[in-house]
Amino acid sequence: MQRKIKIVCLGDSITGPGDGKAYLDKYVKWSDLLQFGLGASLGFNRVEVLNRGVAGDTSSGVLRHLDERLLQAQPDIVVILIGTNNFDKNADKAEASRTFKTDLTDIVAQAKTAGIKVLLLQYPTPRAENMEKVWVHGDAGNPVIEEVARETGCPVLNLKGAFDTAAQTLSLACLASPVDGIHLSPGGELVLAKAVLEKLVSLGWTAAEPDAGKAAAFAFTTTERF
Image (cartoon, rainbow, N blue to C red; front, side, top):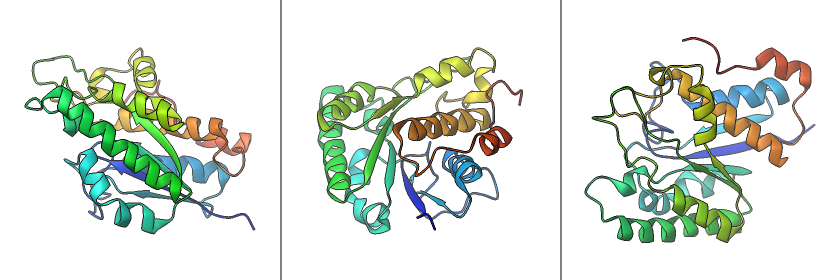
């Protein structure tokens, strides 16, 4: 019998409303779609995805609670999307960058020491039809994420490409909130989940390649109209 793959998703409100807070009566997040996608291709009893995202969190919050949110779960993989709240409009960018790099480097080091594979995500470009209220700082930490990935030898997935491609066929409102341009709409949840799933498979981090028949039966596409 093949061993179950356990994945923890860490991040801010783009990942989850709060550690342990119920939300499935209102919507699903990309982590839930990742669970479904991997389960459909590998077997639903072979994958467990834990959403440990916390709304409003920063890298310092993730680091402070790393033991209970990540290390105690003893997952095989952690997927991390964090940094937006480090760079709010009142933050000193240079100081925020230094703190973010220190925190993220420590998070990666602790995960690796525990034998956990780390995938870092970079934010898509925040955008909406009306840019007046958009959180334009949403991807300000991407250069730091790239730097930490390079220095620690972690794979990194820049979500900008996946969202740029999706925006060719979907409206921006299908991908992200028309108010802030960064919190995901249902279409954006699908785009993010699909990008992460494909990255994990390409890295060989799933125990077996998805069965082509099962994957075809599941495959969602970002060209669907919502």
